Length: 592
Image 1 (tube, rainbow, N blue to C red):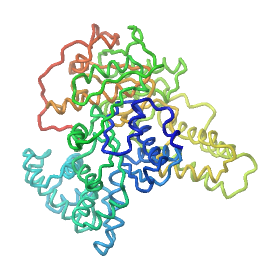
Image 2 (image 1 turned 180 degrees about the vertical axis):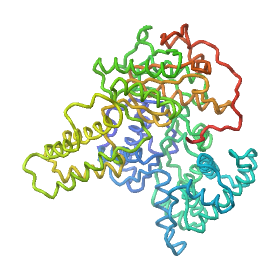
Image 3 (image 1 turned 90 degrees about the horizontal axis):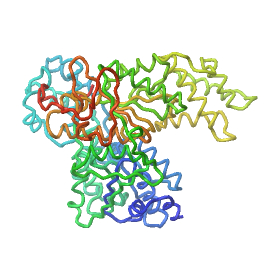
């Protein structure tokens, strides 16, 4: 059985998988198979008898990633591993121990922090606007995950937020905490704080947790906050069986408290740590990796990615990733849309194409340009697939149909129901909401057509409900539009990275060295999402933007210049300005 967990691994991956006793740090570059290594390492430990599944905790940052980890472990024949987010694991422990410690049930979780903040503001006689309240909510989250008190936070934040001076900002945070306590509620950050506090204050609880979980794996370790790291230390105790996996070059949540030094300093914190570097990239062609390596050259913790054998080693000017300059944003959007239309005409699956950008506001022009060409697109960050009204309606009708006998195969029943709701054999010519609805219904039909032979309609609808619970969403046959943050962890064969200009990437409020370095890592994430082709573009616009400084750092050896309009020359080598005109207290991470 242990041989199965080692199948298809390269030498470095095998080293990571077979090193079962910690501490172990796996430095895994983009596309090097980190999730494969994590799951195969756990499976190998179980198969060899080194691990008991119920004593393994695998921690990650999103419910989707945790669900994928459980699915991969099931495929390897491993059940019973606690693959959870930090919050889910902490909440489970609080729910278990709270009644015996407090003699009562666990407080409710705040469902809307901004709304509660608005009530807290009313109580102290102020009325901040909604954007300000969103910023305050983000600041509360950052303060807690970095383990600062309100007084400590205020001392470091002398300028306040928006129209709230520092005194009113402190008053609002205290009012929020008081109102939350009065309503017997906790927010998500309190869940981590309370769990850590419980483990520190109650030795018998700590002993019980240590007895339950003996082997720990943490994914995306570059994204842990000081609070999460403290909680992890309490979970692990004085044991050494911990494996952390991450890539410092993909640290893009510093604004939310992520601290890559926990990954970079892991071997110094653990004298006997084993460090394994994964640098063979199985996703991208060599020409794309050359761009990524140039961008991150000399940065702390940067890995030098090399293409796996069998990947295209394209180095001719015609096959290099391209950079294109446009006159304005509309021209850029239309130019990118035309290139996507050419790709679709050449038979490329729309699901393998993505347009990535720094901020949500940049999506409007590209959505319009694609719609004008009749190209369907899905914007990540919108409604989840199973929350779409077309999908919910279809699921309701399919559930209702399970009570009646079915004369034909269930796929025909699904097709008939979807046709009655507007599904046609061919998609609508235009883009927009009508096309979006068609794509959603078509995805439901495709799931039915791809279902295992012999599946019943009841089993099919049960599977849809399971997918909805675990956020296992099908891919729509559309081009994907996404911010660079939303794109992390995903991949496409063909990526169009737009807005590569000063003020957009790096974004205008990134003024310090650390903030600009985070923008660099965002660009790196975007570049390494691409498998076969990469096009980069920027638009001068009415404000006479300059090309991103990152283009100058990458240079022309790895990027070929294309003329997008009346702009000429090689935009990748122009010198970007160094002066900033945006106030220095604008911090990255202001959501919205």
